[in-house]
Image 1 (spheres, one colour):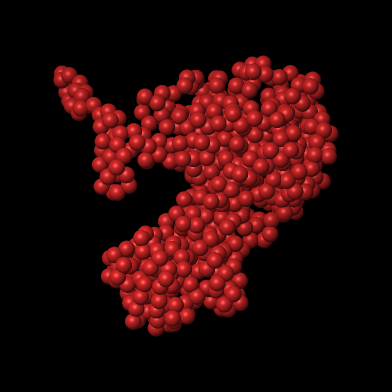
Image 2 (cartoon, rainbow, N blue to C red):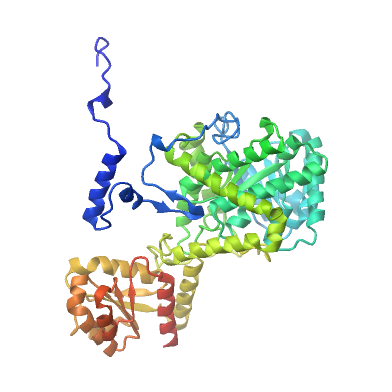
Length: 627
């Protein structure tokens, strides 16, 4: 295009597409695939995905969906960022967690992290961490005027805070320039332990710390509104948000009753949220959290300058797996990216081996370098609110905010966070949510790579020294891999006792094109329970299957082929397997109209996409263990 030629609008050469046209294309695809004969909006709805909290993800978002007024970064409602510059100037705070109980070892890991990209340290102190009196040794050599320190001291938060403040003063740096968080969280402690005997005294102690920080060290926040106990108990994103609001409001009441102004009270809170590998949900959760807290602060009378929520995002422990832990590197990378895009002020990427015990130096290095790559090489922090304006993200942010606000109102209506914890209302709600999610995990609607999908039975286990036992007695701590971990442990016990893992013989029927897909499906399914698969020779028939089954060393079998081949051979092969001593015969696929015929021939169960894999695998192991 020359300077003399008029600008050609390229898009004008193409006809406008509308939603109805797109729906007609969807109808054709669904009809050809045999999914549904639905038309119009119903066809579009067939592609929608249901999430927790009643949120439904549609396959297409357009300008018709609209967005609420977003405001500007650093201004209410703070959806786009808590500060006008976001993290574009210096990046977010790279915060590493340390769980050593030995102050010397803790000091070594703290210094190594700070020398290699970490900008603040998060220390477990007291029960399950370094002793309070070991804080000085732990922080030996740390420039406290440069590196922020965040404490997680549980019931010992008051003495730990006093010791840290003493170290700040002893360092010679002005206390007024210190940064960090003392981590007082009495309600979070109640959630973790179920013990409220000292709650009132703890709240009063936290208020005194907040008053001292306000007067002497405004860069240090006294209280942490930690939503991790609720996420780790199986709570959904909206439940995590709603509970954090209720906790924050309870702390505002305590602080203002103790004499702090509402602005000063708001500035004493740091909110902590989980970041998962569901990147869009994490982005929307952090954006919704700022929007919701801005509304709470506004109603409480805080100024806009004090209403911005300070956020610390931590990669989820619920998503971390103990088998094939290397995949956790990928999960935490996506979660860390999501936290950064979502606008978190500080991000902690947990080491990939954190679920196995105390992380080693290599795992900590990978964790901190993950953030360095996101910040320095991907330049992720250079754009303020990169997801802003996305019709999908804005819609998801709004839906999450509405669901969380409704839950927050329910807690407030039940007399607040402390009362809701004491009554069991919160525990019951989280348990029901986790029960529904557990079913999705069992049926592999929510797959876990390396565990429920694509497991690697021959991979040597990764061992780490035991980590300190976390405090308990209150809300449970769950993991997505719990059910499959129990199955794999049973397989390990079988291997230790018999020198081999339990086996299943995959009886492939008919030509390769007929049985390949279901052989792969069945192998993936049974290996998720630690059951080794034997598929040779292939194919087999009623005459050869008994000999092949005997050579395999397996005690159970699974027929694998197409529905058409099943109609011709399944009954005879199942009967032959039972005659050969198979304790249980499975068939890969839904039985349809021939169920009674197959069952009469010896088929004990049918395995298919969406079946209860945990139940199938557990019963299979039961049979082999009894035998």
